[in-house]
Image 1: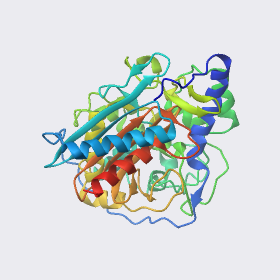
Image 2 (image 1 turned 120 degrees about the vertical axis):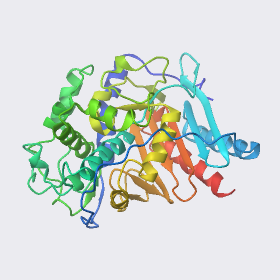
Image 3 (image 1 turned 90 degrees about the vertical axis):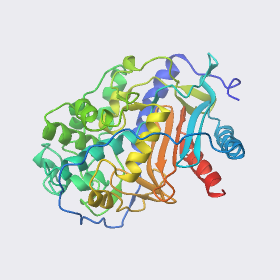
Image 4 (image 1 turned 90 degrees about the horizontal axis):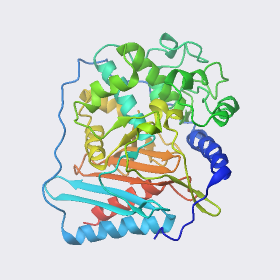
Length: 398
């Protein structure tokens, strides 16, 4: 399917990278809801009980179901011109379906593998907010704490609460401004630290009064990353490993800020351009705690179930986490506390710099769906989200 698609090289690729970065970081913060958020929640509970890695359902899903799932995935890929994808569906008591389709790199005609590691972009937010909620469960912070208790210089920092950062109702300015874009354009190989990213988000004019609207931004989550570092007295990556990755056995999931650390072979990301897909240079550090995680398909399964069931949190905290609100972008029915809800499925999407991802769990049926694709910036849709919806529709049809 993707062999006929041309790839763009040279200086144009560098220019496109700057534009893509701007679009990536700004796409989630252009619109908002005027619905006032709820700030009520439980008193922080005791330490979260330990968990272990969940086991995939035994056996394969029925052949007819597998055929329908593969057809749904291929239809979405063809409709949006996606070069390559991996996807999985897991249903307790019924079985498993995993698939790889298309190519990881157009020029080399490298096939996609289910064992590859993929950037999961904003799904990272769900990990970061989970750590925040864990710390609240342990009484090490309160979700009502103002951000200026942890990070200095944030406009309205004495009013913006940690919960408002997590549910995207802070009103804080985003770090995607001309100063940041110019800084990135000057050296696209620069590896940003979390503190450096947050330095672009302080002393900015408010977008709206805290708690009065919802606007989705990476800056909100990166500030939470700084809170985690301060409270745990550990670098973000170390806290992530200790609190989530190691307990869940997610050996294929890594916080990567330098693309040189991304293990080969791996897919190449493409954005949609006028002349076809344009290959992107991977620069994960610009996303920080909001989007620099890389993962595998099976680790995605584990995270979908963990996120959807609240296995790492106290029950009352998971209930709080599901208090959501309509938000035009990204494509959820409701966005809650570091987690989205679509047609009863709980999870998170990710998009940018040539990749889209979707990781969802249905708490009613116990099913999980994960999709990773190497295309982003499609003006018509979020390809991985469309694939998730198509796969979910197959399951609903029985």
